[in-house]
Length: 185
Image (cartoon, rainbow, N blue to C red):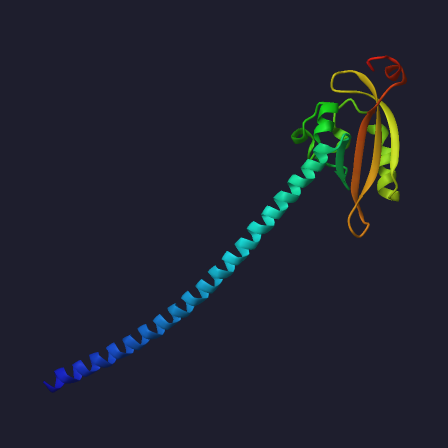
């Protein structure tokens, strides 16, 4: 009975040790749970901020698109590598190349009726000097009609006046013989 009592006492001590270990593990798990809840709350906050910024970006993008759509001129925006960033609807109508076909492409590689090589000088001058350059070039629109196109190259600046590319504004010029005809044809 004494041996059984000692064994029981030993078992009780082992159970108490195991219980203490379980309590310690439970406290660690509670601490981890609190940390996870805190992290989860932070993630919810960051997610809400991200959602808000995404909505702001979408509003700004829609605003930019509405401005570009409202302009009578065709607008192309090129980055510092002369890659097409923006290609508005009026440009697509003029040259027959959709925005998704032009964006991300080198402007010099575009196969349109515009003599792109003739624009290289004014584009580089606008970027290097920060001055507006205007040139009129003879070209062929998407319908195969010969036209004169006035292209204005404007440096694309950020708030610090650093030039990050160039804006190209393109408008078909009325030919003198077109303006003289009664219907303007």
